[in-house]
Image (cartoon, rainbow, N blue to C red; front, side, top):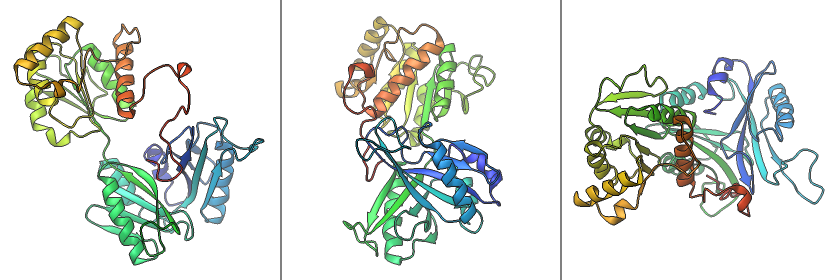
Length: 370
């Protein structure tokens, strides 16, 4: 929903259809949560498969708009001949197509406002018997019901936990919320604030990294101690531009750093790098990269060891920053850094797909995919 939200908010009031990937198997092109919306007058935004099944989903959405009845459709290959409408990649996706209007989704404005403001919120929807029943879970309140108090309680507990890590998945329960039962499947979509990217060093490379970070969905902060360089005019794509010593700023922002956070240290100046990395390597940040030559890197490691940073902590540092793509320009370098961040986040090999075997989209599971 996050991807199409800006387009669909003006549609609310008149009925439109929202199609959401709720489950995947094998090499599915989009992950659970990917959405496509269709307005009452036929405008479509978003994507559930990158083009493979959009035409059929569009037709289903128009039927849902007409009837007001939600449905779940499964697309993939079931035998050697496959489907006339399916995924050429060989994957399988399940798509929930539901009507959205004031009668069917009274909490829509609450959900939309929470997503736009970065307030954690989860939407749980029954996708088996009782299809379309919905529960909206915030940290301080719950609205709606799935039809049974025990089921509501079990889903609320899971949804709160999922808000902690921003996961989206199908969860299965007994009719009254019993665990290890499969009578009821509930699609829980957790919307959390976007992950943070901190870019230290207000240089041309940082401007390119900030642009790519925003494109990837990060909340981007650029920080530099030099006010003449750290300006909004030089970093218009950044969410924040901060003038401060990097280590001092990070020390005050530790509550914003978690395993989804990317720290990009581009200053390659020891008076900035060393105190910053000494602190950064002791955070939970999922990615910590530092720019510089091999000589700069060796000198930086020596200084960090002298400052008491352990070998285990140093092992978390990716330096020189980025993948070996032959990058030269700031834009090319930003792409190499972004590629390394994605590979680190997904624990991927970062090898050309032509040299690998097996699933392209590794890790997808038909049940409880995240």
